[in-house]
Amino acid sequence: MGFREFVLFIAGLMATNAIAIDSMLPALPEIGESLGIDTANHTQLVVTAYLLGFGGAQLIYGTLADRFGRRTILLFGLAVYTAASIGAIFAGTLEVMLAARVAQGIGAAATRILAITIVRDCYSGSHMARVMSLAFLVFLSVPIVAPSIGQAIMLVAPWRGIFLMLCALGAVLFVWTLGRLPETLHPEDRSPISFAGICHAFGLIVRSRVTVGYMLAITMVMGGLFGFINSAQQVFADAFDAEELFTLIFALIAVFMAASSLLNARVVEKLGMRRVSHVALCGYLAVTLVHAGIVLGDVENIWTFSILQGAMMFFFGLMVSNFNSMAMEPVGHVAGTASSVLGFVSTVGGALAGFVLGQNFDGTTLPLTLGFAGLAGAALCCVAFAESGRLFRADIRVSDTAT
Image (cartoon, rainbow, N blue to C red; front, side, top):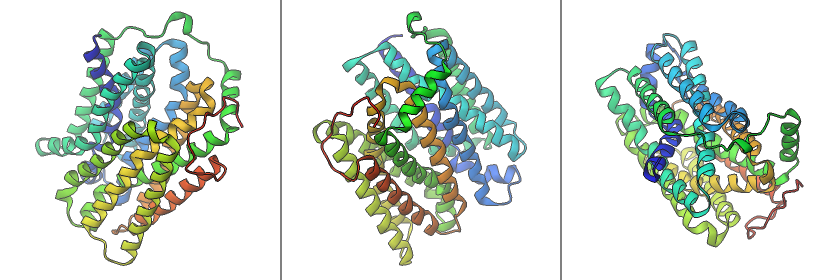
């Protein structure tokens, strides 16, 4: 592949996850009605099932790709993603839909793990940074436009058309991989699957105070994000009676997160990951407390919700990538396994926390905002644990030895 084609290919892989979640948010009421779901909150299972499959499969893809090669495992994942999308198109019951969504998440997990791995195989240094920066711009745009894509499809087709679009995306990427992507793992770098080696890596991870603390902090804030995603359509339709504004305001909220991610890339080297992320976490907690106070004071409306949710997502974008980097610092020599464990814990744990928040939706934003505040406070405790109570320090080089 040429450089431009390679960037577009990686961006396409990175987009499969977000579009599989966000594009169907406007369709959840229709999906629930079609599948005979009699409790509105239960439609959130369509999102949670996908996240559980996506998070759980991350544990295995890194190890398999190191043994069998990137191309083979990526083709497998894309095939599962495409086949699961077909299954969802023909789903007639909630059980079949949930099985298809779990499988779809399992397939998408391969794109999450392999996209970054393939870039590392092909580029290094500033060239790698350039590829990731350009691909990340496309990736950030997906949550902004995906709900509108889903809404546009529903103007001309039933909700099953959204899964047809996801099927087409998976098929295009499968053919693209088959025809244009060579194997990027050098034969001498293939490593056997070693149960003892995996157990050793897991032991190093759980003994690292920094890794465990930041991994749990990511899980807490991801729980808030998934809780918002689960409940967003119901909040606008039921709490504010403004369903027609959902896709527009959701996109504007996503813009805040995209903007902060770009800002972080500019300031993190100058200020340091710890200072940026710790200040952002305190800002995130403050916004959640203010939001909860507004709801308890019975002065919440669609504009206070949207503005404060946008502020939350702005601080979210300044936290997660830095938390992830700091969690990986002490375990760099087992980075593949560590990345898989981090993705598994944060996604599955966050999905379960977000599901609990969503299931407590009662037609108001009170359970959601109280949940945001609780998870933010828990995240601060996790970071304090990781840093032994010393926040806002300059970045320090963490030894590869677990502590």
